[in-house]
Amino acid sequence: MVIERRVSAKAASPAEERTFTSLRPTQLEEYVGQTDLVAKLRIALEASRRRNEPLGHILFHGPPGLGKTTLSHIISEEMGTRLVKTSGPSLSRPADLMGILTGLQQGDVLFIDEIHRMPSAVEEFLYPAMEDYRVDF
Image 1 (tube, rainbow, N blue to C red):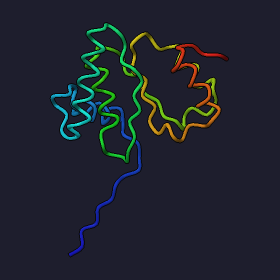
Image 2: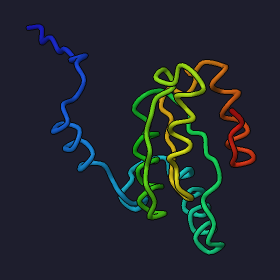
Image 3: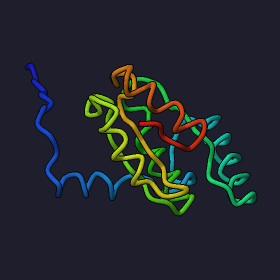
Image 4: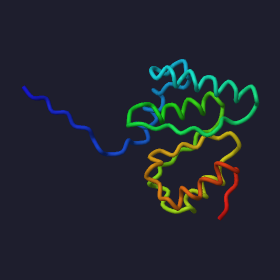
């Protein structure tokens, strides 16, 4: 007997997205796996809180399903800040990124999924924003 499984390529509805989000861990204590990474994140988060400063830039990389998005949610929750999500392919020109960056508040977490698919012109625009916390347009 052959059982065929198919994965739907359609996007999740807003209700499904809320369900998925509600099932995500919201604290490092709830996160399962990657113990070395979790330990390092715990230290970085605590140091940031004690200094009363935003957490530094972090780049998560790896294949799908390792928890990169979940960890961005956890960091936002642990720091008590907003999470702003976008994707690299949706940022086709620097102006697209400018709209997001100018809406950020101090301490907000910006998560760019699929950042490796972002055009190089947008990447070059992101560098000074990350290094100097300013944008040149």
